Image 1: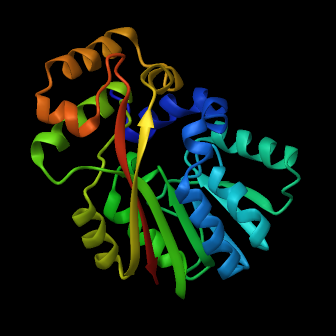
Image 2: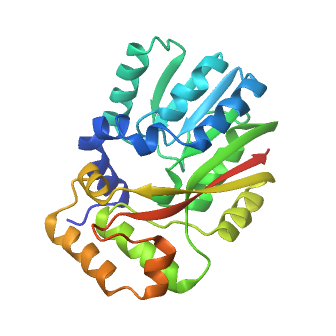
Length: 253
């Protein structure tokens, strides 16, 4: 029997929950620092960490919110978030298991919604963003942070290929234009966007997902065969380490 996309995602991420809690790439970054400022200014009564993964957004929001709900498809991820929040004394963090495309909350439930490094796994990107809009209170902010694809097809194809080989639950890294069009269709109004680069250490990157060796070899083969233009853009290093672009998009409901 062929597994559904959600089943593939659960199989990929469930056993890797602790690795994502401890991931340096996920636990830090200028986007998290800015998100802290957003939360400090908003002082939300209820905040949503949509597609929480290792829970780093929840830990960032908790000191500034009355309540934070961390939502993820994986029960293992949620267990890791609960344990980490308890260790950190963050008693206002709770969890809820649900797909991004079908959130079990009433319209306008949240005063702040944040989503970081999750949307590129969603089965239905438009539906997930529409659900984020539905549960955001009118006039409140949502913040989306994710890897973005270059606009040029040559570069986009390379990125999507190595992402999928590394993680079979990968759907798509979206370009900035796709993000803007999708949030606007959902009824959000874009307010600001910032982008920064993140260097991915190749060994850590594939070990975090426990990528099978044949697929690791395929990624390295693609990197070795890449044109100079691709190699220069991603800054591909001899050991396979490379750079990605990350977008932080702030919108108003």
